[in-house]
Amino acid sequence: MSEPIAALATASGMGGVAVIRLSGDRVYAIADALTRLPFPPSQRQPGTFVYASLYGENDEVLDDAILLFFRAPHSYTGEDTVEFHVHGGQIVPQKVLKRLWELGARPAQAGEFTKRAFLNGRMDLTQAEAVADIIAARSTRAERAARANLQGCLGETLSPLYEDVLAHAVQVEHLLDFDEGELPADFFSDVIERLSQLAEHTKSLLATWHESRLVREGALVVIAGKPNAGKSTLLNLLLGYDRAIVSDEAGTTRDTIEETFLLDGVPIRLTDTAGLRDAPGLVEREGVSRAKALLEYADVVLYLIAEPDSSEPPEGAIVIHTKADLVAPPHGSLAISVHEQPQLARACVCSVLRKALQLSAGETAHATLANERQFALLTNADSALQEAILAFKKGEIGYVPAAQRLRAAAEALGDILGRTYSEDLLDRVFSTFCIGK
Ligand SMILES: Nc1nc2c(ncn2[C@@H]2O[C@H](COP(=O)(O)OP(=O)(O)O)[C@@H](O)[C@H]2O)c(=O)[nH]1
Ligand SMILES: [Mg+2]
Image 1 (cartoon, protein in one colour):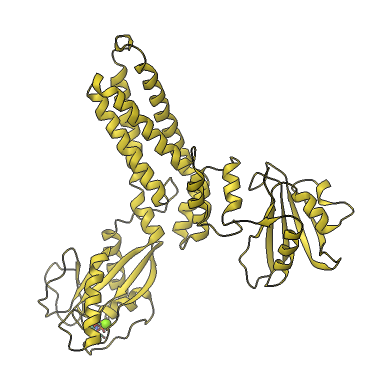
Image 2 (cartoon, protein in one colour; image 1 turned 60 degrees about the vertical axis):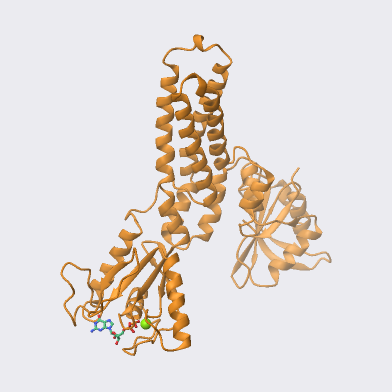
């Protein structure tokens, strides 16, 4: 039994068409009551549609709509589903939804359609998460990575790993019930070799998280340096518009200014800061202390120097010499002139950022980890595997703990896929979804 649920699947607000999705048991009875067609929805073939008036309680027409029919298990949720394409805007969709509540449907919770799709075996948990990621994507790169996982890239990589580790755990547990003397002599060396191969897979999958996280969460890049080093000029150049005031008056930028631009699909939170100096005014002093605090959190610090400047760059910062058109930069240094060669300066700084952030040029069409949950579980699986291998290498005394670690590794892998799950986990995953998805 699954209660009929309904929600607006399209964004609320002005729009030509709004789509309302209705899924669960009895949805065809509801659609019959709503349309009053002589050839009612309940008698229609799945995969067809009809244009019909929708009626309210007192025979008034709520809207004219197109209805699409899906039958379990061939629908997004795997349940009977009817979609209503009605006029968009503030009023009509709300009227139709209200009527659906009167007819026995209830409002869907965030992500509930996708949760049902998962529970009905239409997709694994990594695919369900990819649905939310496609919607949340802020760049085509993020969207492509999410699409790959929605198509099952991550699931198809993890499933055989899970099956294999689980099979080993089961086999070892089984063999431990026998006398060691009965085991084939090379049994455990074979197991160790096979597990080491599996650990290679978990390692390479773990390595995808760095870039994935950047694509998803972006990177904080802070531009620092003394007043007049050309920080605001560089910020404007990278953004492509005049965001910050540029002036030869020292102390022009007193607050921190943050704007985002995309570098190869990675959102770069670019932050311009007050020039680092013993500032005369209170406001600028506050700006300087904020700038210093930001240096701690930055993924990359670009430290600009306009000669002559003998200041010490913060540790780990990338030094860029500016205004190369005015003063020859030190030999072998990284130098730009925004005034004379803006294109070159931009290309140079972008390539510095790519390198510092370790961004690969290629876009993702393979399995990547998509979130902290997956990363944490795979990290656990990976260390459990390593511990199992070490335990096996100890010989007989290690076999029991090794079997336990193998079991733990299998469980962690299974959790990523949602082979095992708790209500609590599903709540956490699906509560971040949009209503109507
Ligand atoms: N000649 C030259 N002047 C520059 C260059 N970049 C910035 N400036 C000038 O340096 C002054 C300070 O620049 P600004 O970006 O405000 O520096 P900030 O204090 O570090 O933010 C301004 O007058 C800019 O026009 C450059 O590449 N060449
Ligand atoms: Mg400035």
